[in-house]
Length: 319
Image (cartoon, rainbow, N blue to C red; front, side, top):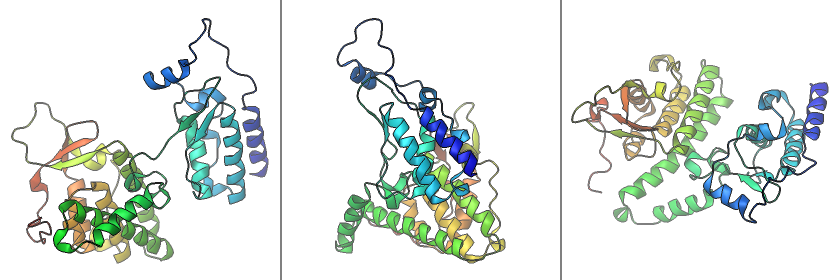
């Protein structure tokens, strides 16, 4: 690996731009780059500008932290010569920083002979931040918002207040359950951790695209409407969720929170947080494996009858 890494660092150094791109045949407006940035979408990925390929970089786990940092820093310097920078949190763990500098090669961006282009990642807040909610630049604002809610008398809480409080609790519990699973020695640990990683990847993709599921009984079926399980729509057709009786308690708990977050920030989450992890897991697996209809790019319509909450407390009553 040492020899390969040395060659990789050499390739990155050779990829640096030493000359500005050729000027256009006709004199450009002083604001040409800004106008292009505002009115046109870039067509070339960063890899096509610099000649590096994301596939040539080893996974973070095959490198030491020092090696990850060396590659990330070399890529940062190379990107800078093209006028490209990445908007990353200062305290981002080294492995994540390494990953985002490699993934940036697949991002379409502008390269010009002046000015800088910044590749942004987090636009939707901590819930769907690709860096993880703990590293989101918006985290302090969100924590302040929830703290203000919790300082209000319960009688003054709105439905949105209940949802914000519930959602922060669910995200925190999700992290704690995953950490407990990683540190424990449950029988299906390896499989469940991979399943959790797949769910989280799908969740971030779904949230960043503004996706949502609407529980509604359609008045009449649309002609030619296609029904598939939600997990299939989310590119997880092969995901297998073990029967509850085959899961250890920490495994079922971790999966129940991951699935709850995948469903989305909806008032339904308040009721689901009120029940036990086994019940939550069973109900959500049933829902996500039930055929639902796609009504938009990342929007889905599910029959209201897909859930039976007659046994659940209606925590939103009277809000």
